[in-house]
Image (tube, rainbow, N blue to C red):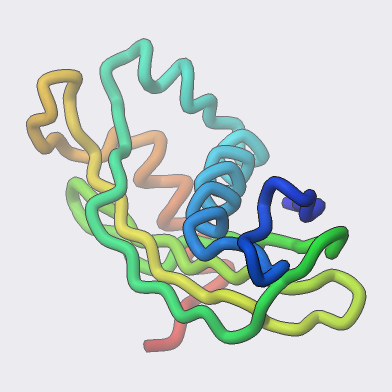
Length: 136
């Protein structure tokens, strides 16, 4: 997913404020699911909710005003009621790695109780993991 950096995204130093990357990655995860035929809204309406439960992020280089970024997302770990995605934010023009993160999401009910990933999602994520295995 591409993200253009606007003035509102930057801090007093003229670089993207760190928490904005979390928002970019959230949007990219939603678009990742959409690309694979899953609607976050439809899942939510069926009582399938994916809150973030852990983020491990490394901020390697700054993005600046008007940069065009690409956020890459892939499945890294699959468990019974959670999954982890590996995400990278790179500057499009030079492929410079700016942020890399592992984001773990749990599958929960509307009452915030853990539940197993639905079979349709588990099968999709298993296939994606087989196509793009993660190291470490």
